[in-house]
Amino acid sequence: MSEPEKSFDVAMIGLGYIGLPTAAVIARSGLSVRGVDINREAVDTINAGGVHIEEKDLDALVRDVVSRGLLSASTEAPEADTFLIAVPTPFKGDHQPDISYVLSALEMIAPKVRPGNCVILESTSPVGTTKQIAARLAELRPDLKVPGHCEDGAHDVHLAYCPERVLPGHIIAELVANDRVIGGLTPACSERAAAFYQQFVDGACLPTEAGAAEMVKLSENSFRDVNIAFANELSLIAEEMGIDVWEVIRLANRHPRVNILQPGPGVGGHCIAVDPWFLVAATPDKARLIRTAREVNDGKAVHVAERLKGMMDARPDAKLALLGLAFKPNIDDFRESPALEIAEELVADYADRLLVVEPFTKALPGKLAGSGAVLTSLDDAMAQADLVAVLVDHDAFKNAPRSIASGKTIYDTRGMWA
Image 1 (cartoon, rainbow, N blue to C red):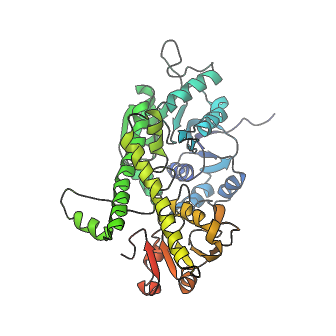
Image 2 (image 1 turned 45 degrees about the vertical axis):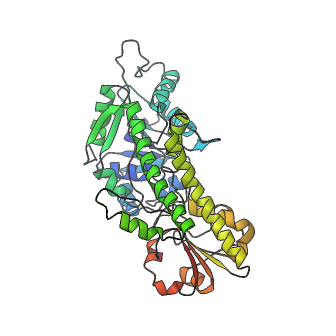
């Protein structure tokens, strides 16, 4: 007779940049966690006590909770009391949201859900996704009483939306310290989900309804995108006028009610560069400012690439050092990175003249791989390059002596050497 399948306190579906740190933090609280991912290599790495992503303090935390038997990984979903879904939600076509990964995750766990369980979506999603999950679960499991799909309203499973709101490089600390918005499909769902998060979150757990919670997450990232777009547009205006934008922002921010952000080569990452489009897609006639901000930030990367092409064409024998490919400083995440987009735009015509410096990768990603561009150290790049483009202000670059850029023509999108 075979042994009964083990049931876990928590099943985390998706072990990427958010799923794995969250699973590890939950396990640290003493709950048994089974992480689930379709990436067999990631699963094997985690079960060996390792990590497949870069995040401060994550390696030691995973090693500890795996060694204590609190965290394990698999490619198959187990039975559990609480199911968390933290899978990608990209866009497709003309910036239309793609929730296929979320629905696939739900279909994976649906056979395992039992009365009394809680299913929580953490993936940033379009408004209405949690209700779509409920409808799909009701189709897959007519034996369950799903919120909104049972005649007497007395549901026996709980569904909620609870978005992460963490900063890469500080995820472990912020998963515990930050407030959480808990959006249940019913007040009972919110209460059940809040009780779960209160086991490992020090911040406040703020109950609301699911649609509001979904819009909160999109609003947070759209707010940041709009403010970055103002800074990026300001940089374009200042460049056109021959004025130092960094000086303008520094002095303008001395006003007691002004706080202009810093411009850059665009906006990257899976959140700010993607999430505003979910609001645009839902209400295209209303989200005019949000759409414009997205277009300004996407256009900044195009502008930087064109400026660098002009510099290369003006000096046909010059080599260009590209400093950074990640979407923000001090991480190994290249998702939606404007720096990588710029490098890939240049590589078609100037590959053999490109010296790429990215301390957070061992191999050139994307279209740069095998292109002829060279991944090298900062010292070697600065020794060979005539032109330098600062695309990411990694600490390794900021801490280097300013003298290494002496005699170079510099295009600094980050104000690192301003």
